[in-house]
Length: 359
Image 1 (cartoon, rainbow, N blue to C red):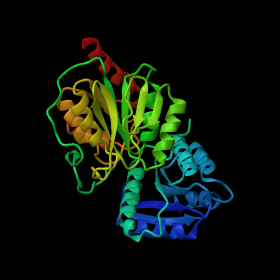
Image 2 (image 1 turned 120 degrees about the horizontal axis):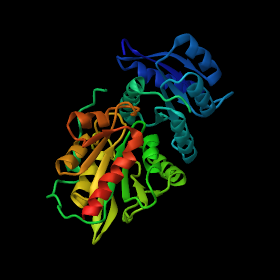
Image 3 (image 1 turned 90 degrees about the horizontal axis):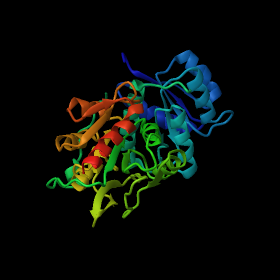
């Protein structure tokens, strides 16, 4: 994209509009070209200013953000980042917005936590950059900061387990655009699918709502992972926000373990951590997919799995909202297959059931 990324900020709070404007304007490649206190004003400013990206509040006068987003994605699809409250209701509405086509979301900045604002600015500007490059669905690559830690900080390398059993595992990782991509994959799974473990970059509270939503709309029993949950066929476990999810063994059973270990690739949960644990616990008795997402988390983990002989899948560029994570995995030679989203469930099932038949 030539020139600066042009952003329109839509929020009924003058303070939030000013905060977001100042934060975004602090980036050399981003410019806030206007603000709007409600969707009616925003509609006119979109026509006049032609922004590249919108930030959109959910609760506003005259028209709520969801109604505005639904109309926008039907008539003039464009990249939207939802600015959400960190509440149960905020999580539900935000997931609805992602379903309608919003690229991503960020929680409202906390004015009373000054020392955390620097991290918030980095997250906000990264998401705006990703949104500007995202593939937008009609309704019907970033410079990553230096890695703080690798998976070794949470789960050290151990010798690979080479045994083969009939108990198979599917591991899935995703970030930007991932809530809808994960839904599509889980919708393609039968009730007797192998146990599934999932790491999606998502804040606390939102992961609970996301798991509950997936449980309602997919054939599987889906829940937010709790420490000690037994991973069995027909069940999927989603990492809680701000905790790493690891697959471990307890006797003959696979179980979920949660960790408050270091951020990996700036994330907790981290896909790399999940994939490392799957490799060390399930060995060749697993398959993995890396879906749409910003950055590179999961690429190193997918490569470890691939190099150990596991079947690995990366979502293709055409169906990814942001081809950062899967694109990096492809670049590193980590993918056994590169598939469109609609074929990933079948690809995973083919891989694990082939192994099961050979076990």
